[in-house]
Amino acid sequence: MRGGAGRAAWAALPPGPAGRLAVRDAASCDGHWFLVGAVIGPAGASRPAAWSSDDARTWQPMSLAPRTYYARRAVLSSVACRDGRIAAVGARSGGAHGNPRVTSWYQRADGTLVDMPASFELYGGPDAISVRHVAAGPDGWLIAGNRLSGAAVWFSRDATDFRLVDHDRALSSDPEHTTSALDQVHDGTRWTVVGRVEVPGRTGALPAAWTSPDGVAWTRQEVPPGTRGFAELERVVRSGDDLVAVGLRGQRFGVWRRTSDRWTGGEAFGSFARDLSGPAYVTGVAAHGDALVAAASDGSRFRVWADPGPGSWRPVDVPHPTRASGDTRLSVVGGAASLLLLSDDGTSGRVWVAGWNTLSR
Image (cartoon, rainbow, N blue to C red; front, side, top):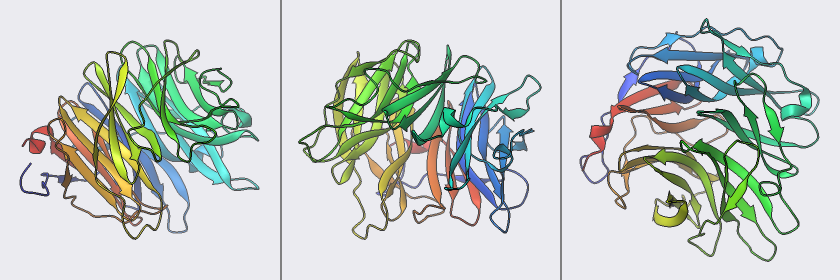
């Protein structure tokens, strides 16, 4: 990384056919990349879209076969891959109250991405709060989210039949804890969900994490807050045998690491914008060896920071600065050899690629 701000050598990519592309998430399996999002029509109509690539530079559209009304209109927001196959989560607002109608997707043997019809109350219904990301592990797939009962997950062995777990004693809320799940990862041995917990008598939330060997039965782990104010774990990634989580810590972004089953609070970086026009939140984190990259909204604009080595965070100049709003997005996704920057400024979606070596000191 060169200079005080550290300009990464991003290269623009054509992710697919011309049109208004909403780029949302990407995943890498054994050097093969998958990208998901949607194509947005001039009147706001949407249809799901996905692409694949062997080199993160040349992208081919994937075949999709949506079967339900909302699947045909979904924006795919999250994707994960395992054994060369992907699963995805998408949604489109609709119905009498305009709530998100969530759909989950799996990849057939012929490579086609297909939605899995589900009962309305599996992801929605009167207890629905949010459905966030999907992740892959050696034993199946896990979606994290929240219900009126608190933090919840959906687990499936093959991504075709998800089971809702929303009343686990450790994961769910109780009279002394209001829990929220924000992200998840498999560490090679078990699942870890991260988020926050609110307790009576404390002004701000506390960071929280839970583990499970099977995606069904959960155990809570202690996470030091690192601040007297608000703190939460928003995104988590595997880094060797450790986990690294990034989230909000007071008026800055914070890093937490789990080593040998013990969470510790790391450094803080960045700061919230003075002219807050929206919430601050982390959109993505990627790890490669000791290097970390994180993307977040500072409450006004999306920003990217990199840490080439432990504790040396610095801002990264991005090729297409984007204001943070409900229609825009900027995130980072890491692979074994490349790092992707996904950008959507509300008028067009863009994908940029850089080698991890561009982040060297």
